[in-house]
Image 1: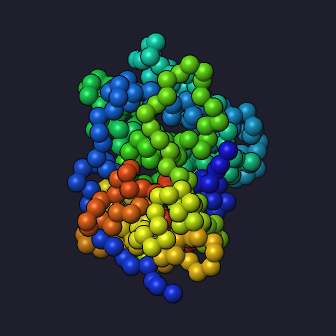
Image 2 (image 1 turned 90 degrees about the vertical axis):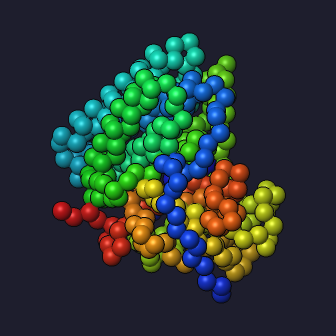
Image 3 (image 1 turned 90 degrees about the horizontal axis):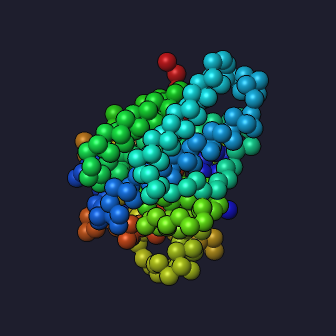
Length: 334
């Protein structure tokens, strides 16, 4: 089981050429094709994510006591509020399963890499943010308006969860005026690393996980406009998979809010097969800097001749917690 994307986040000669920054033409990371199964597939996609969140909180509340949370600096009523979040996730599962009836998929098997209270909460923050991005990205594809209302109602609660956990971790609870939509394969790529097996007899969802993207751990907080990012073995892995050639131009594509940023990656010297950009993009061209929970993929699209899509993504999705410009300590202060 690989935790390549999230584990690095929890643990913590040619210059990269800055590419264009774009406002998205629609509130999704990329255009979708109609899904096989339509709304039923989308609801099962949401149910799969809710099963994951429910099991994550069930395990966390079973593994870590109220006393351990208090000892880690999370005073009462924080533990009680985590129970409320767990209850919300249970209720989301019940609502979606009831709506789907006999068509509902069953809970998969999961494994999560948290080892203590703080790593549990770091992963909680990531999962809640991904949940918001998943519902936001899927909303435009829901045909039945009654289902859309249910999904929208869940989305707003997931957003409250995210803000609450972020504030507890002393991160900005609302780092950007717009949340970030992700498409089905992008979200599935993030969720799949925690899934160890599916229920026998359940139909496979029509989604694929991209080749994983490992970000080199850093002891410093990421800051827009200054921080470099190294993508470990990304070129080597893509060449071995037959996705690119050694001289194929590759771009790091960042998603933050409704903005998409393209930066050409350079190859790191040596035989590690790493890609690197020398700084995370910043504001410009009437765009805000990427802040908060920011997503990144590697793609052959440069943002000009071609926009990023599932078809030209070679690895992803990576996650970075990015400070607003000028913030160096990674701590949100009132």
